[in-house]
Amino acid sequence: MLTLQSIENVKDALGSIEDVENLLRSKFHKQLTEPGIKNPVKFLQRWSYISTQITRLLGAALSRAHIADVQFLLAEIAYGECGFGNRYKMHSKLMIELINKSPYADAITQRLDTYFLDLFEKTVLELSHMSQEEAIGFIVSLEAPAYQILELLKQTCIAVGISEIDFLNTEYFLIHNAIEKEHQESGNEAMQIILDNGFELSKIYKGGEKGIKFITEFLGC
Image 1 (cartoon, helix red, strand yellow):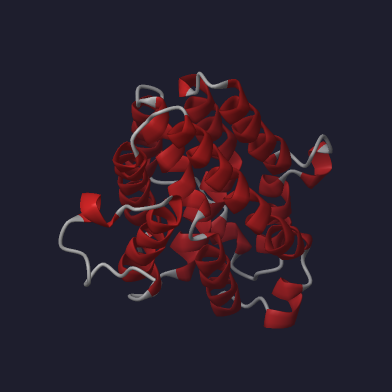
Image 2 (tube, one colour; image 1 turned 120 degrees about the vertical axis):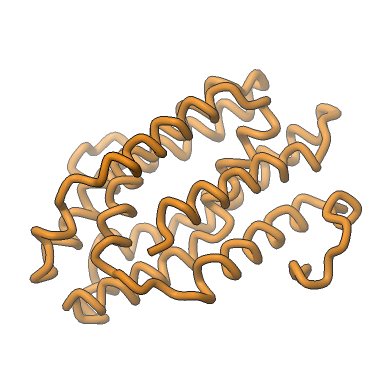
């Protein structure tokens, strides 16, 4: 697996779409997983907000996709986030059900600071003006470290009084643990389609770097 320490020239290191995913996972690990989360309440508050707004990021990326098969894959991920047509199984609602198991639920569900609300809006706007390749890379950067995010969620939920067994038995975890691989495969397929149409892998990675920068700034606490 490629590591940040072993790479002197990122562009030269990008020999495959797997390299893009591995590099983005490494960046996420170095910047969020390795330092850990010092304030679990704020982390869960911010992740809950992203959960309610993730389809806007997907929609912004979708607006940049002009290859029909890529549009399909992004729409499929968004449909899954919306509960596959069941509004009561929307992932954002399942996240709130999980948070409500914590005695700190009131603090976690407080309105975000204006800084983070503005940061999210600026990110949606930036994403809606990226190239197709960069937009896909941005979405891949959110999916590639999905299991690292789940682990951080577990750790922070335990820190706010939700037992590990309760976390592992929630619909939110069970669904995400089952489908994250599918989302990663969709991102992988979207990258392959873009490459097959003559676009550069380095531009996909550039969008992925922007995604990691966003999620690090938004979630780091």
